[in-house]
View 1 (tube, one colour):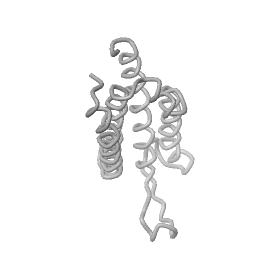
View 2 (tube, rainbow, N blue to C red):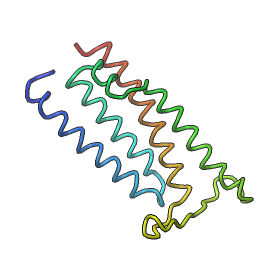
View 3 (cartoon, rainbow, N blue to C red):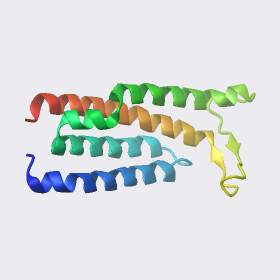
View 4 (tube, rainbow, N blue to C red):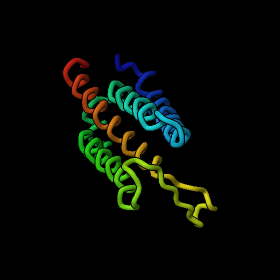
Length: 138
């Protein structure tokens, strides 16, 4: 499966897949599903790269075990959901912040929740995919 063409094209393909996953994540932060769909695309990119260069290379590139990313994402998602409780609103109520540093572009707690979901999906699916590749791909 690791042909020369596949090994050469995999970095370009995975870069495009990661870029598209970030687009889906940010586009959907006001709509449901941006974090989950973007996470699936990013986990697919990690799996493709693992098939091209090997699981050991991907594990070194990730710097952490994929489950660590999932745990960190879960913490971010829970904190984003609880932020409204600390502000005196019901759980998972969207709060907005209008920073002047970004030209006044509003940021919502929904964006942080979607980033958390993105990391949970990337971490868990990547862990599964890399374990399967380690076992069944030469």
